[in-house]
Length: 212
Ligand SMILES: [Zn+2]
Image 1 (cartoon, rainbow, N blue to C red):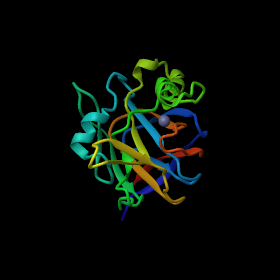
Image 2: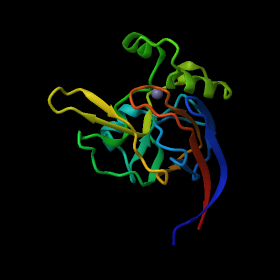
Image 3: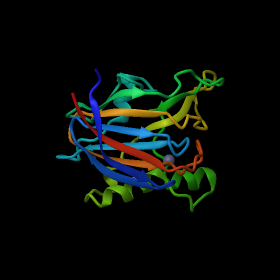
């Protein structure tokens, strides 16, 4: 018998923007695609000590570049502990024809200077800005933004050139990912406004408590 899940909070992240919120240890964070395909840039901090934050680079080595159910999201040294465990992932695991797969740990969050220097766009919002704005209300500055877990982002590595590529997210409206918090966390999400894998949808996150 699976645990019963009771909805505690529902967070809507408006398209192209960011939001931050708390998830308590044992609660389930559900990231959904109800509003349509959308890359979700994810950051997390230990609620008690925000210097302990998510470590995309180490998690990539331990769990692989495209984490799915069973994978854990690890925090930085000197703690290096699981912050979240992915319980459910309904996104298609098959690679695209070009070889991309869902959920990315290769790409960092998009940022203003990147948009400007490489695409000539100085007005476009960025995940770095979205995450910065989102955590300000919790008293955290820009220096707490870190490399992201990019949920529902399709990426691959070209075997010839050894360069990364992204393809448009094409997840289904019913797709979701459930993550169990392994410690009290602050989470920030950005509905990515970048053009690497362009999408324009809201992100809908739900926080559940479980009871046997
Ligand atoms: Zn982005």
